[in-house]
Length: 411
Image 1 (cartoon, rainbow, N blue to C red):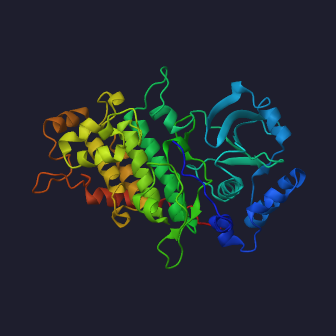
Image 2: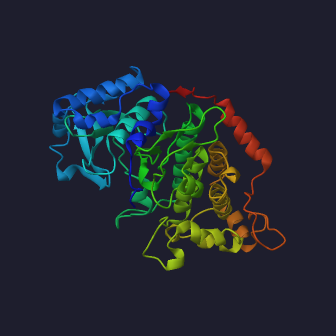
């Protein structure tokens, strides 16, 4: 799926980068790159990065020659994938004996100089186990290349929506593990970073998986600093991927952390159902995942119909009900009624703790799911509430607090 078009006025270019707005109002416009010679562009970008980052940037500046050597001249055998941004190759940095993923941005593609700079800055200043590590970058001439740690299992999309014939589908426990880790990445951006960071492009293809299927968020070119002080939102051009954007953001351009929560709900629903958010190969009424799911949320008898058929029924039924309840809450039309991402993490932690419940209990739930299902109102419709004891949630929350904060990250 493509991204929304990038129609930028000069005012947009100067004002869109939240980092520039916060760090240095005198920072030069990225548009100045167009009037510089090839020999001076790399130095200019490096100076801009160091100036905005105030010397805290740890990412290494690679030459194009170094990356050509590391990827065997970007040989097709090393191609890991490609999209609207360009191509990603597997590489090996000899000097550090490190395997890396080298993303060569398409010079005519969507991701331009602004997004390139934002991503370098964001990933150099933000560090968390559920965010991909940026090894370095290259800005030789008109080349724009990002070098990341190598993630051997590719993206969540590869294992969920684009499954190769010889690849085994993700089991239920792995899916919940990935959802929890991805939510933790968002929680770090929303709750620990200061000011908060709105990711703005949360989708399955941007969730990368390491050798143990631990998830890491990648592609921060659209990230935006969130509101501070008494501001309730930031206003910006609508950007992102169709189907994942929160309705209020798509309509008004008003962006909040709850916009990311909606996007998380969409991806979580993809994880549960194995369906793409937009799938034109399905019947008309099923092409939009959220539209298809909304009426099914209202009746518990439909919940098992929403589980990915590739799971072959191998999941705790009670956990399925609770997972769908979390997804439904994240997908609320009104932003204020959606949970905070920290509450989502707590709910997913509880699911992870109870994911191996006894199969006999599941059989009982299939026969009579009243105790495991969300409560039903007088009309017989579900209120979409998780069947989780408040004391249990409080206990999980206490354990999380006892772990202590990792410390805030200021820009």
